[in-house]
Image 1: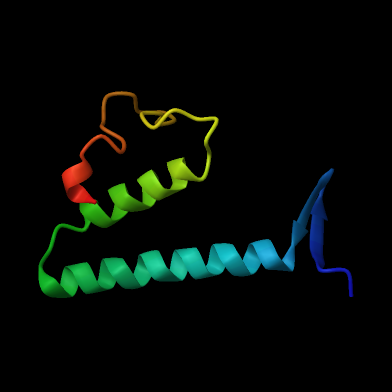
Image 2 (image 1 turned 180 degrees about the horizontal axis):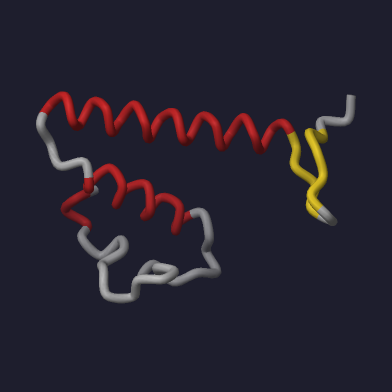
Length: 80
């Protein structure tokens, strides 16, 4: 077994990447459900997920937001 799930053009998608992405999305989903249950602001969960995503891309500045340059992105450390 090669570990390759499928190809999209020249891009190879592996099972390991699919499992990591599934785990991250499940964790974000569970955190959102728990935040709603506790009556907390769910936007904090989304902001934290975006900040952690930005940390995974060191070549990208922390204030990078595709499509919306007016909203803050990883600037409010208190939400973390």
